[in-house]
Image (tube, rainbow, N blue to C red; front, side, top):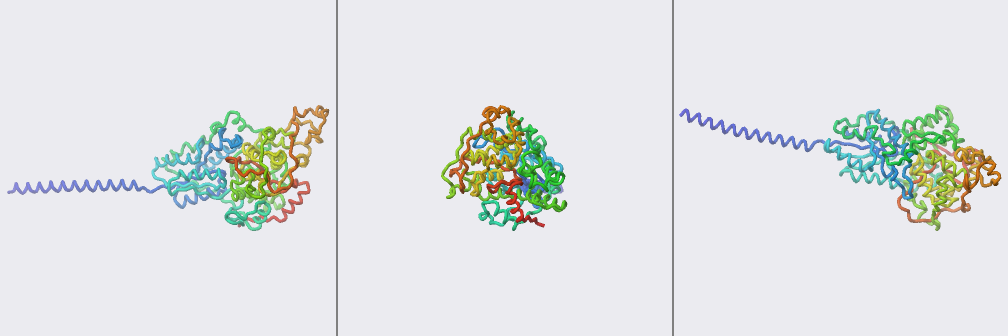
Length: 611
């Protein structure tokens, strides 16, 4: 009996043990499943990729400030990056006309600017990813995949400065296509002195005047310039990733060695030599970057005290300080136009000097603004053969044409017109040309030689260090008379005598004319054969005979007609960004009667800053 009871108890214990084991296994399995589900539903990480474009600076950068504010609000990481787009840089990146999209001198300037930006970000606890050899959307697509492999699911977004013309907008569209659902590229207005939302015009700028003076009058009276934004140094550090896996993925692009050389960008040996050579005849050496930009502003305005006489010297052509030379840094956003305007205001207050010169620099920045706003209003029409006149009654019936020998002579500085030739040779050798020179060579090509103005803009795009699509392309379009305003035909000989009275500039760039006296320096075709021998220059041998030019154009509202745009765009170089192109056929020399016209304009000026 006792044995039977013990046996039953053993059976009950065995059953309990089996049941207990099953229950434990079930609980353990449930826990494992719960852990797996928790891992599958891990909190998504937010990452903002900040895409630097033509805003290579920390100070007063609206897009950058937006990125870090958004990052703080979402507890997101902010990762800055820059791409050397192979569609722009390198020997194979050419325009429809055969010119380089970006010559080696400008490419060198940009590499310096990117190096400076990368260094500044690193010093403040952030960093800059640098890519080359792949388009921005290709880099973004691969980078996102690499990051997600090492860190898990990510909610991505991209922030960059807003651009308004076709090629720049296509870059944004391409990046939007590679972003995952619910992610997008946010664009933030920047690069202008006046905010777009502060203009006294409709949102689409439909009522904005198509000529500068009425635009300027309304803006100066009704709008105010915002104060520059502080550089978000602390926020950049706080938002930069600290995850080791992510930093490992980023490391190759964060290195100082990630900034490419000209060789790595795809330029050939001759182009590399050109890009790395600084011609001693140039006005100054331009070094890219925010550091150099801010130093130049302080040097020109406060240290050398040149701001107070800018109006009187701005039409010079020799030397570093006849004009501000801010334009290369403005073109790539190494310095903010609002910062420059504010420094001009500070100069007036601290030095007690407020005159036409202190105003005129800000006036030039407003002209630069106008070029971008005009481009926003009219879009790609500024690239059409007839500009904004295309398809309107103002468009004449003739078409733009090209005669290759004439175009080549203009490009090589061999037209036989010394002022034109000297300016063209300066640009090819140094990447820079004065505002006065730009106006003259543009007028000469379009209105005297009657050549297709888009080829001129295309050539400027390749060579100018300070190329900026809005300022430069607008000015070529306007210079050809394709914006509907008054046509500004410059008398080259008269301009030569007014702005290079003693021929110093011409002799500087045309050494074959170094012994030609002042009486003939701007009109060498007037020399007899005996005089040519006496002065050591034979026309047609040492210096070309002057090119045949068309008769002065009659006053008209339009220009050559070609309603169909040829392919892409031949983006123009153009005027120096801080030197306004002539707004009428009258000259703007500080020593002639047009000075009165400038002063009349000045008396009506009202520059207002937000408090």
